Image (cartoon, rainbow, N blue to C red; front, side):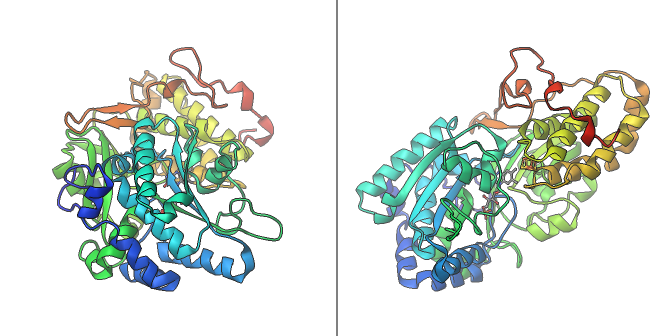
Amino acid sequence: MTVDTDRLLPSTPVTSLADHLDAGGGRGLERARVLGTDGVCDLLEDAGLRGRGGAGFPTARKWRGVATTAREGGGTVTLVANAAEGEPGTYKDRTLIEQQPYAFLEGMCIALEATGAATAHIGIKEKFTTPVERLRRALGEIREAGWAHAERIEIVTGPDAYLFGEESAMLEVIEGNLPMPRIVKPFEAGLAASTTEAHPTVVNNVETLSHVTAILARGAAWFREAGTEDSPGTMLFTVVGDVQSPGVYELALGTPLRTLLTDVAGAEDIKAVYSGVSNAVITEAMLDTPLCFDRMQESGSGLGSGGFVVYDHSRAIVDVLSVLVRFLAVESCGQCNACKLGNSAMAELLATVQRGEAEQTDLETLLRWTHTVTDQNRCYLPVGSQIMVGSTVEAFVDEFVATVQAGEPTPADLPTPLVEHIDEDTGEVTYHERYHRKQLDWSYSDEEPGELRLEAIRDPAVSPQE
Ligand SMILES: Cc1cc2nc3c(=O)[nH]c(=O)nc-3n(C[C@H](O)[C@H](O)[C@H](O)COP(=O)(O)O)c2cc1C
Ligand code: SF4
């Protein structure tokens, strides 16, 4: 599903190590051996590579940081490749693994070489059976071919939870625990950290590591032939929702968002777009923004991990916001009271509006929760809901008020946009089938439609309504 650039996604899937080597694979790792830590980091810095997992953090800075900590006595470095892909609206990492797993694994070998990491783990959901199988086969091939670094790479399968993809929660899973975010960042205290040694861990997204392989093989100037000054290169974008051609597309950064959504994915009559659940809603007025980290942020939203969920004017905005907030309420782990309670309360208020039973004061209460939901937060999840709810109510305030005044139920027929599969031939998108039954304690209700059971977490002492 490549459009005008095929740097990462090949025109036909690469199905063997021999095919990867024929297409120039292996050169990146050779170059990394010659360059060493500083040389590799200098090259990635010249290329301007920024992480594709959501925050756009410069990869070279991350790698240099852990290598320095280790050199100064902080213990051994570990590498973690983040293949959890839990953001609503994304499907690019699984596509990449299925179509070209060797470039990703070579990127891991380069990272092992450059950061001096002793071991590496790939964190991937157990339910992603096809990508897991593809990775196992490719890893087996490169081990058999004698790539020494591959002996130090382990695949760790994890739970079907959004927080599995949060980097510190992924470390918890690798250590055999539930995906609960930590207070300290992995580069400060990593896997098997102790009171005397930090053992810093570097966490990178699958796509980021795949770009590393291409940059090492072809150079910084080549990488910068696509993209913008602050966001060089290409990026994989997923588009789902109310579009004619959902899919995963590779485009140069800097391409206008409108081009991706309308020309490439065939969206019409766009009402609201979400780049995952951590950014502000994107409205029609923002569609000419270039797809790059800084410009998307300046526009008031963000690039996220490049997954876009599109809703057209046939949708009730309260239905849209309700599925997204319900997702965050369910996925919040509850270590921080304000996050679990605030997200649950907002989900409940939106469900009341959907049933046609809300009053105008409920909208004010909804907005009040956005002020407190981030109190003492360990991770970014509630910041996402604060931004998403605040921006959506602000952009569509007239519709929210009119819906409450009408007092009629809304269709409430939208799936949670967690992508299970996109059929490349037919463009058919399959979403997580049972998600609407997932509960606040991460169990699944047997009932349809599976309304949230709130009693378990309600605590009036923390409620701003009291
Ligand atoms: C709630 C939450 C969920 C996340 N899920 C993912 C994910 O599924 N995949 C991913 O690569 N990064 C995810 N991230 C971002 C990671 O924490 C981390 O920043 C990223 O893997 C770093 O890789 P990069 O520097 O290559 O972008 C998530 C972050 C948060 C706060
Ligand atoms: S902020 Fe929310 S999701 Fe993050 S650790 Fe706290 S309760 Fe869990």
